[in-house]
Amino acid sequence: MKYQCAHRWAFSAWGGQLAEQEDALAPPVRHEVTVRVTHCGMCHSDLHLQAGGFDMGGGKLSSFERAGIKLPVTMGHEIVGVVVEIGPEVTGIAVGTHVVVYPWLGCGECATCQSGDEHLCVKAARNLGFHAPGGYADTARVPHEKYLVPIGSLDPARAATFACAGITALSAIRKLPPAAADGWIAVIGCGGVGMTGVALLSATSTAKIVAIDPDPAKRESALAHGAALAFDPGAADALKTINKACGFNVSGVIDFVGSEASSTLAVNLVRRAGTVVIVGLFGGEFKMPLPMFALKSISIIGSYVGGLNELRELVALAQQKTLPEIPLDRRPLATVNEALDDLTHGRVVGRVVLQP
Image: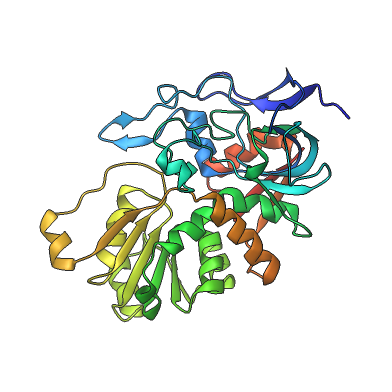
């Protein structure tokens, strides 16, 4: 069967709502693959993309337009579907295979890409759902079969979350030193990615987990998915209360929010010689007196999504053992604007997964 057009939901102005459109779809060439989308996860970064940029602090806003992203934009980078067409040079993947798509594409040629870290490409990002049309559509075009990971019998809705939430959480966890497992690990922000972090930590680490989120429903869900304790960061004396409950032994913090308030809490909460991993992109500026870096001897590490090998590792892990399952909110693709609004206003627990 030949797919001659793609039915997409896209925005044509920064800050604008998504509208239906149809685009011509040429036959795949060389290593290209056409995937019929069955599920696509929704991410907080979609909100930043739709708005046009990130809050960089000090009244400054980054610009996706200046970064080379052109309108209209079809978002959606957590894509699962079925291979329906392949280019003439494709090997190792067959029509009919159910796959999760790795969306964080680089130039493929620089030293960083050649090392397996295309998501950190220093030359030319080609991310699906950003620079190229993503999964808020009935079909997606993938430039090479190497970016497809077969999912076998895994729940396709759950597998969709692996392409961003899953590998983002796994990559952040991997940046904590082994010694961190001897103490408490604090997870700040228990949205879709943070909740995935709690679930993966409970499945892969012996560390005790403390979840921190202002939403009582998210704290309750975190406790159900492996956290031993959960606290509201806005409560009176929250820092003192959390530290006392953890025996002043928080050896690692993963900040899935990335705001001025959350990063300040993270560096004040972590013990001496501990590690803070900042993942979230909420925005703002990070401020800390320089002498404290030496006096506390802490490590502060940034972590951005994850690599193709980490997606393969996560799929293999899910196939080998039962992982704690975060809540999924399955919705029709036609309700995408309402879903984005719910995500904007914090009305989502877990992850929204859209189905065409």
